[in-house]
Image 1 (cartoon, each protein chain N blue to C red):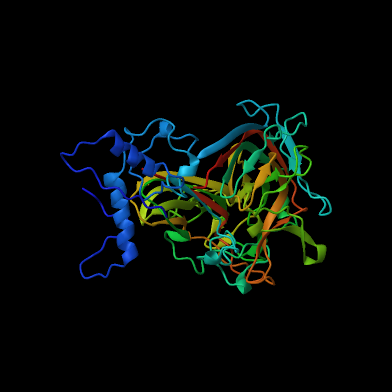
Image 2: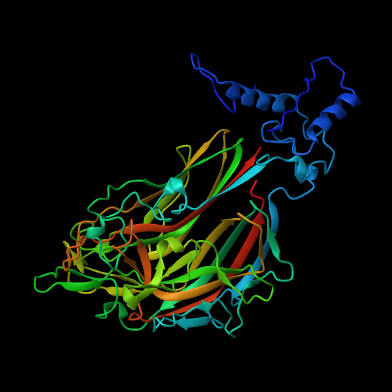
Length: 305
Length: 234
């Protein structure tokens, strides 16, 4: 910690140029200004030779342009085989990937710098029929039936799509995208291959999108019992968004960022893990599509302190 | 009037030398320092600034690697059903067998050093909640047609030093992402930030147990949580 020793100006004293210059020299030493010896509101932007917090920023289009939820839009369907989970890079309706390309002027994160990334996208999850009621669909449980008889199997309604963030920190060729730190690829195998997905702890850059809303409209739910398996209520178009932050522990050069969709996923729990582990697993027995219009991918590089 | 910004010594309290020195230096900085009118343009270079001289950014990721949040894995852990009571196809999370409705601290962090000034919080994450009973027959008594909304949502709020800075009703879909951003002026000194949630309480018709395995049903959960705090001094 630096220390600045200089008597204060007393009332009635004349402040000379020498006094001011000496004081200024004190404060202009390398590494002399800290939060303790800097007067409140002493500096404004005009005094600073660099931007105080923000180093770089960029905004990129995601998906398609336009305000209305009409064509062009982009769609993809659920994973049908655990051997090849759907990984859909956000793109426009023509199949051109919409990524944040920084390769012409890569961002160099110094130790302590903070990379913050934000995204938003208008989405429309849809399906046909009632896939959540299929005998093999995940998330079904039994509740008593109104009027007695066998229990009724209903859904917990927790199927979802995931959008997660990847970056390329290898080269400007943008051929080495990988999940950002703290984010997985949903490729871990569970239950001897019967399931695939990822631990919830590996979803630090994930936005989840509800696949449907199913509940007991009307008098279906009564006194802890149900009279039917409920019904789906249209969610329509809605906005989804996310945020990711990373403080560089070592020098890192970022060449690009992109958003990747996968699904359909469903919550699970691995009781054998220690101390416990919540999971998101693919449900290949639940079908649906996700259509999206457009949005923005925004990134800023900030000084950490 | 100079305020105490580092250590407010009280009568009969012992004061360590470092506590006095830090306060004294802060006071000297305020009283004897040059102000903005006396500095020329472009006079402050990066080399002249020490760490956290003007601002500081905290990236808060309550992950297992963080010793102070061991095993939280980015999830709220205030309410967690026993593993033995959890359905394999649900999260180990909040159930109505254990939940005491009310604002619950999911994460807490003390931010230091904080000289005093603007503090911005950007909190993001995902939620899951059981919504099948979001419409039930007896939620508002007998009626015709039967049933009334039995609201389901997860309220979210941010507190600085115990004071609510922002609050929102929160997500109402079965799975959803959320983002809460707020800013407030905060006095100098360590700032305790609390990120809280409040799941709606049980309705009159809700079922809470899977009749097949007799496991407790998950009702709500917060996960994938991350937050950024940006402090900018006056």
